[in-house]
Image 1 (cartoon, rainbow, N blue to C red):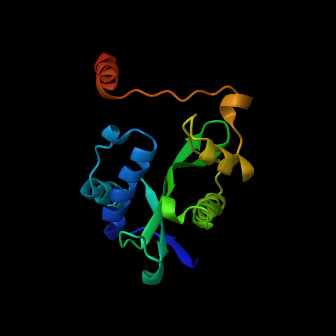
Image 2 (cartoon, rainbow, N blue to C red):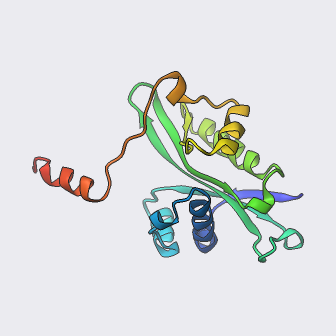
Length: 173
């Protein structure tokens, strides 16, 4: 199947928003999606973008059963390792189920890796839910390391009330 991988544009955010919800449903967390396509446009395509997008697109002849030609995306941003320097974090890699197994996910991941190398990043990092065996096998097959198994790293976060409480407890300048 022919497809293209290209940089995302603000006009892609409606389709990306749709696919974010599809991914959240797959990950059994749809109630956690709070962002709108307008917020995606603002956050990704303002003067100081918080993220970058890649879009996987098929021709009209190969569109999805629902008529979509934008069938996958990768959302990433730059981070920094105090030990090694510049890094790239991939927040999402998603391909619509009917287009999986056609090389689209691998092409998106490969392009993210190329961008990482072009920017001289020391690593490409991401998370996978522990029950998501197909994705874990996909990444491991391509050479990814499971740091929770080899180095014991755990992903932690503050959000909602916990973030508010912590922010309020922090000393103010």
